[in-house]
Image (cartoon, rainbow, N blue to C red):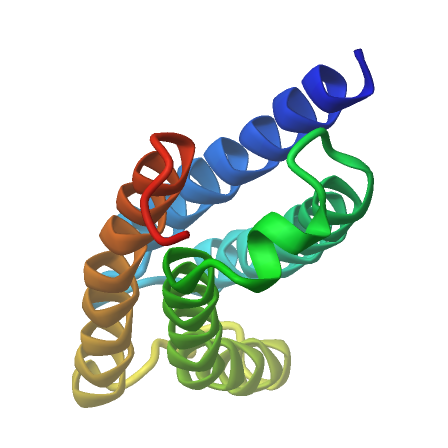
Length: 149
């Protein structure tokens, strides 16, 4: 039963993470206004928090899940999944830093709108995250079918 609860919690955290990412991706567009920057900042904080929750639940699942930690430690597909997740995390740094900078500028100037070149640069990192995100459920599905051991 513990394994089922952990699996459900982990899946819900990951699906919520992807939903927040999609909302952030949709909101980050040229011409974004100060009010929307505040929403974008909130989404980005939620994205980070949900990523941390997915990590924590995932670690608990590795330790206390029915497969046992030995299954994961020796599974190259698990490590590929972790590398993909790390890549997503690293790719999220630039947009987060930009959003923080833009929100600060919008606080000082209510008419502030980020320069299109900066938005374009941040969106490139979002595209990279999206590309890497595809690998995470792919590796998870492979692991669930016994690949990598």
